[in-house]
Image (cartoon, rainbow, N blue to C red; front, side, top):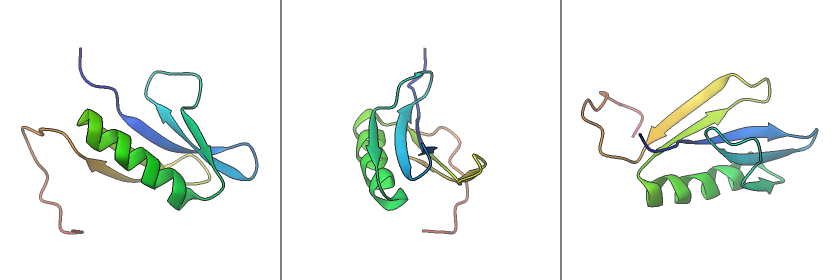
Length: 78
């Protein structure tokens, strides 16, 4: 079984949450998306997983992989 990714998702009407893939409960809640991204990034690095960042409408905005990717993308954003 592969490692579970972390998702930064809109939470309630005003905040953001970090949710581990496959979980119905959120792992943490935050008032800003930046705070949620920071927390998700820490957990994704620790677990060598991927961080998936969503927009307010739920669509995926960005992804960052912190694991051992056998086919790394040619990422030019960093």
